[in-house]
Length: 164
Ligand SMILES: Nc1nc2c(ncn2[C@@H]2O[C@H](COP(=O)(O)OP(=O)(O)OP(=O)(O)O)[C@@H](O)[C@H]2O)c(=O)[nH]1
Ligand SMILES: [Mg+2]
Image (cartoon, rainbow, N blue to C red; front, side, top):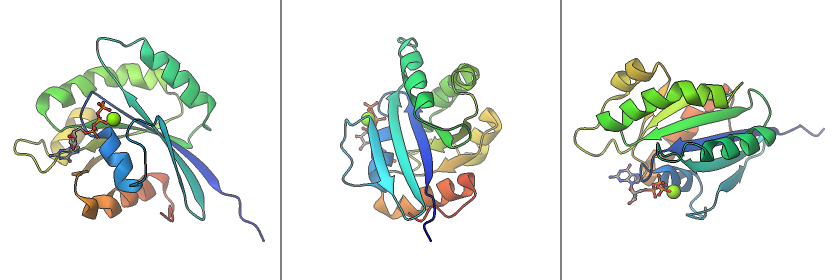
C-alpha cells in the first residue's frame, strides 16, 4: 500500500544576518547558502524551505515572494518562521511587521525562531512569546547538536512525526 506524502512549505523570513541560512543548513548541511528554496525529504513528507530576507527599506519585495510562496503551497500546510537574532531591537521590528505579514500570508501557521541564544543579552523564549504572542523556539543554529530541537519544533507545530 502506498502512503501519500505530505507537502509542507516553510517560509524562513527575517532581517539580514539573523541566521536564516544557518537554520536551513542545520537541517540539511548540503543546502546552498544562497539558494532560495531547499527541499528535504523524509518517508512521510517533503519539506520545502524558502528563505527570504525582509527589510524595512524594501517592503514591496515581500509581495512577489508571498505570491509565489502561496501559489506553491496548500492552505494550513504552510508555515512562516520569523527568525530573529533575539535582540530587543529585532524583536521589536518583528512585532511591528507581524500585522503586515499576517495579511500577506493567509491560512499560514506562524512561529518565531529565537536564534543566536549563545550570545549574551539574547531575549528568552518566554519574553519573546509575550511580545509576539507566537510559539517561539530558542536555538543557536551554529551548533549542529541543535538539529533535533528544530526538527522537534517542526513536528510539534505540524502535529505529526516529520520523520526527519
Ligand atoms: N553566534 C551565533 N552566530 C550565528 C548563529 N546563527 C548564525 N550565525 C552567524 O550569523 C551570520 C549570518 O548567518 P546567516 O545564516 O548567513 O544569516 P541570514 O539571515 O541567512 O543572512 P542573509 O541571507 O544575509 O539575510 C553568520 O556569520 C553566521 O555564522 C547563532 O546561532 N549564533
Ligand atoms: Mg541567508
